[in-house]
Image (tube, rainbow, N blue to C red; front, side, top):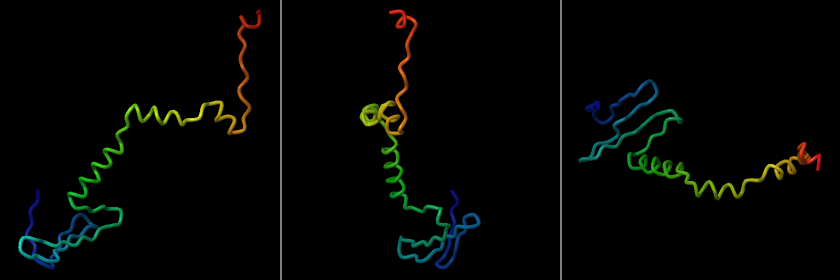
Amino acid sequence: MLTLTRSVGETIRIGDDIEVHVVEVRGGTVRLGFKAPREVTIHREEVYRQIAEANLLAAQVTADSLGALAAFAPSASAAEAVAGEPPAPATQTAEDASA
C-alpha cells in the first residue's frame, strides 16, 4: 500500500484520468473529492461489499430454480407453431411399413 501525506487543497493523481482532492480535514475525518471518467465506479468500501454480495447472490442458480424455469419453456412443436412453421412429418420405419 502506498501511503501519502497531503494537505487541504492538494491533489493525488491515479493514472492519467483520476484525481483525488483533499477537500477538508477535521479531527479524525478527511473529506476527499474525486474526478474520474463516468465509466469508473467509485464506492465507499461498505457499499462496494454490499454490491458484490448482492451480485454473488443473484448469480447463484440452484437446480430447483432451473426446474421451475423449464416449466415455462415452450416445447419445440409449440415454438414451430408460433413461428408459423408446419409440424415436422412423422417418420415411418421399415417395420411400420410392413405392418
